Length: 116
Length: 115
Image (cartoon, rainbow over all chains, first blue to last red; front, side, top):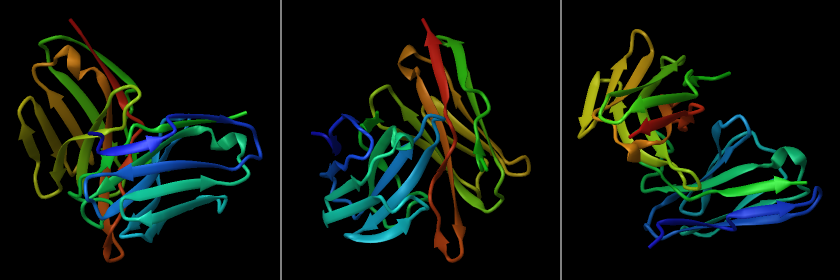
């Protein structure tokens, strides 16, 4: 059983398109996150949702919009894709509401987005 | 502005020997440090952590040492095994402005353990 799953695993698309990445966790966790790992390999948090409410929104373009239909799902929608959006996007979840501390996060396998 | 730095992008070690992965940080407000391990095509998985009130935490073959005065932590793996070959991320978080902040990750160190 996959704890945190993401679809699709790979996504290749043209500039200007709109795309979505889906994330689901079956761990019963309250908090879900989206991270971006860019070409320089830095893993940076983008968003965090706790019980379907946004609690962290780092400085990302408003072309990125997370949507949480329920606490087991956090989808990432990206409008008007740009070349610089090419990266690996990881979804994660944790039991507690804090992003850091001893609140262990469980990561999905990642979605490699390539914008041509 | 890298608050968490892993200055060695890669490390190669012989099986059975010790692997030492290093991490430096700049923000003295960090109070919790974690190591995550990542295999190719998988997400990072939690390995071990340490609170800033401690200087050592051990879990089986893995030990994390924290030197707060030097703002430095290290992960020791003894003995190293080929299955330990992966990318290791150091991460830190702190209590800022009344709430626990995000995890800040380093760039990772790729460990290769040769049989």
